[in-house]
Image (tube, rainbow, N blue to C red; front, side, top):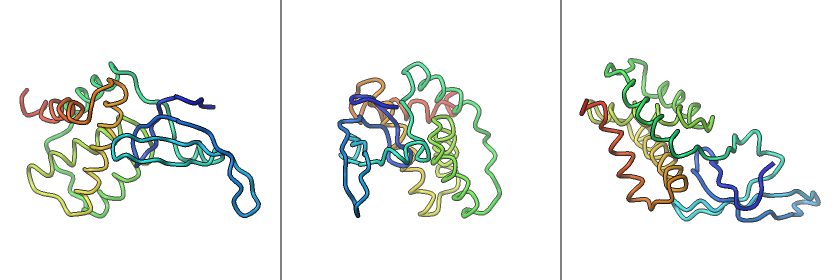
Length: 165
């Protein structure tokens, strides 16, 4: 399915490189694992090959798609704030991020980014905002081959896109 050196996104953790494959015997059951290196956060993750599909692992997006999607999403986020309770927003946002879909993660980031600027966020929503930002930044870092500061600068440029237009 994937090969060593592939750059993938693992939802809730971010983009990383498949460094290796390992066979592990755990409780008498031998399984194959992908070893992912996720540079943002200096994280190593072992993901069982059997759970790749359910984990929504995917190859990262191409450069042009990332920035055009960020621009599109930033320009389309409505300034009206959703009225449902924070815990319903939390549940909805977590579901979007877990899909691994870049556009859905960008929607979560922009909605929470603007909500924070206008009204503030609960601590749980701040954590989701940080997670969405980290996931997007990691994908920018590996797609554009830039460091985290440049990735953050690129994201921030599009985060304020709506306010500048």
